[in-house]
Image 1: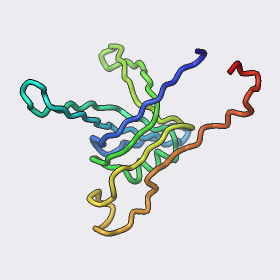
Image 2: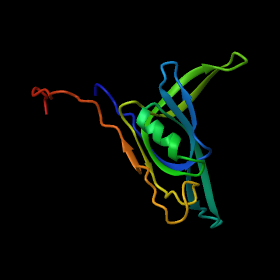
Image 3: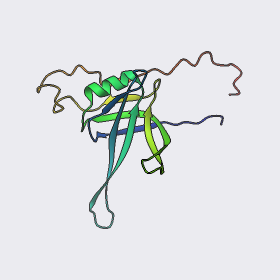
Length: 151
């Protein structure tokens, strides 16, 4: 296989409000931590168990970054589609560190808001919520398909 697939799908809750920063070119980048949890019952003790994983999500897609900045808050339940990326950086002591993040790139990815606006500080009970619940950027054009494919 010449290529591969790098796709991550997560459903979880924001651990805190999104952080917004701007690049030198004026592009908005939004980051947030997303908690995913799984629950099960221990076979021996019948005790209910839960494990939470924390994921760092970075949005490079400007439209999705605007939506995340405007509508997502701590506790928001969302669906995120992106790709894994690990980057190397050096901390203040000179130690090399690695961070694995979920990247929502400029031309791919999706964010779907799964909870209503009620209780999120965006309006009174019964108010309509005019934010788009799903935002998706189309894949870039792949051009004409080559008819010489072997399958």
